[in-house]
Image (cartoon, rainbow, N blue to C red; front, side):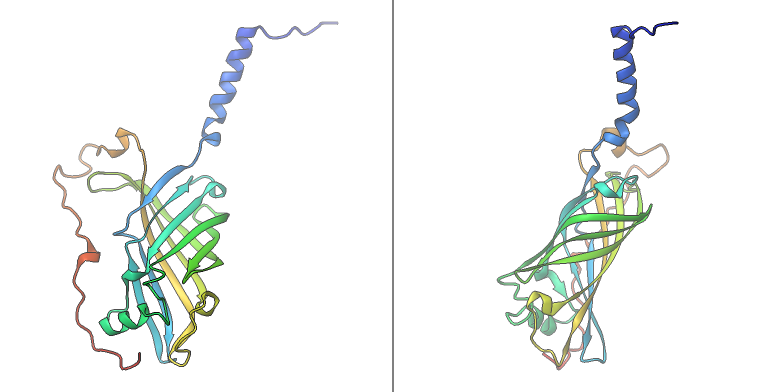
Amino acid sequence: MSISRPLPRRACRAWLLAVLLACGPAMAAPATYQLDPVHTRVLFAISHAGFSQAMGTVSGSTGLFQFDPGDWSQARVEVSVPLDRADLGDAAWNKAMAAGNLLDTRRHPQATFVSTRVLGIDATHAEVTGNLTLHGVTREVTLAVTFNQLKRHPLPPFRRTAGFSATATLSRADFGITSWKSVIGDTVQLTIQAEATRSGQELEDTAPAAGEAPAAAPVEPDAAAAPLQPTPQDPSP
């Protein structure tokens, strides 16, 4: 009967190193991305006295998320939305929306969302649940998220960029915003388009490949800085 002998110490170390290298990608922490405030927009739609869905946008959101395309369970999101930049396309409506009986942006200029759990559906879809703080009230909200793509941006500084789309539905009354019920509906439909660039990426991630982009590529304008076009005023407050 043969008796197995323990592996030499050097062989044990080599075996352990091989196991660690094989598990390395799975054990690595997800990359961190910073939101691009120019290319991240929140669109909201709400009934205008039943006649139509009034639509507005909020630009300038900031925050970060951690994301691994191969593992939704490690994803994490923290976002701040500047409500004082909400725009319905009309100065009078913008003023009414920011007033104390609605968003009250003087006291609550920001809305925040912090994820608490992420449920992956498939490689490009997930449900992201978290705490939304709006108008000084915090409620749980779930976003239906679509992962669009992750690649190096074609314009300088050629950073790795991730793109996402998301939708959600909430009740404004749940957040203590109850004025003008005869004119403004309760259900708010949210549509979010977000881009974010990777933080602390290595040099090769920022250098363009040969022939990938011209040496002096055009710089994208800040769409948020464009002046509003005048629109007819709605007689409703």
